[in-house]
Amino acid sequence: MASLQGKTLFITGASRGIGLAIALRAARDGANVAIAAKSSVPNPKLPGTIHSAVQAVTEAGGQGLALKCDIREEDDVRAAVAATVDAFGGIDILVNNASAIWLAGALDTPMKRFDLMNQVNARGSFLCAQACLPYLRQAANPHILTLAPPPSLDPRWWAPHTGYTLAKMGMSFVTLGLAGEFGPQGVAVNALWPRTIIATDALNMIPGVEIPRCRKPAIVADAAHAVLSRPAAGFHGHFLIDEDVLREAGVEDFSGYAVDPSQPLLPDLFLDP
Image (tube, rainbow, N blue to C red; front, top):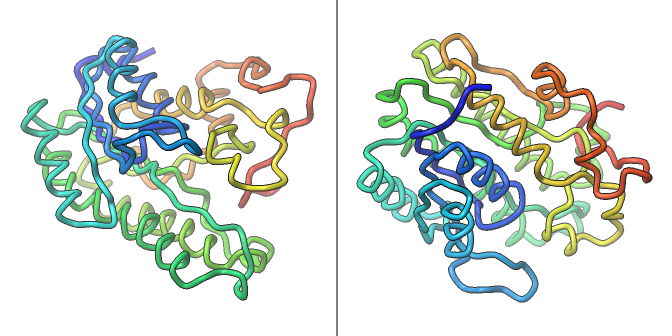
């Protein structure tokens, strides 16, 4: 399998969960990883900070850079990108992982929460891409990978939580547009989404999700690695599913990714059965 050794990744929301798992998988190859997230001090409800993530990246064999960054703030993002370039000489890969969630109907969605989701998810992904693209276009094998689902207009995904679906599909449509604009210029712009719900600390804040029926973040990290290792030329505009990516890479046994292999898995949102 191709390696990310020496590549520089800018990953948003990488202090924990899927973002951290992607960072550690790249670090095992010897990659440089910029950890861009808001978590600079420990939170009792959500463990992990940019500093603990960098320590983990270093222990895994990579070089890490801790960047306190709120991707809703343009100045934060541009400063973080500049710091990454200063530290590592450029940017090869952007992973838009940061995302806000609120699974409630329209009457139970405060506008403050609605604004947060759209500022982080769609606007944040666009802003990070805009800031990184001048450097990505100079890279040898540039990738933008966004954690977003295949676009869907099916009302069953919109009716229960219009605000969240709008924000998440916003990331999908940003991917679609950037792929159309920059794919022909050699930048691989794609999205990745898990087949099943992934067990992260953030799930503890969502009632009713049975953790034993989830998969570990490692499956998304391994799929992301397979995507980001591919030649960028001609590879854009795809809405990839983690399990499908790994099957294509030769993985046949997925039991090791399950939190509890004896339990039936919970399918993730936005995917047909």
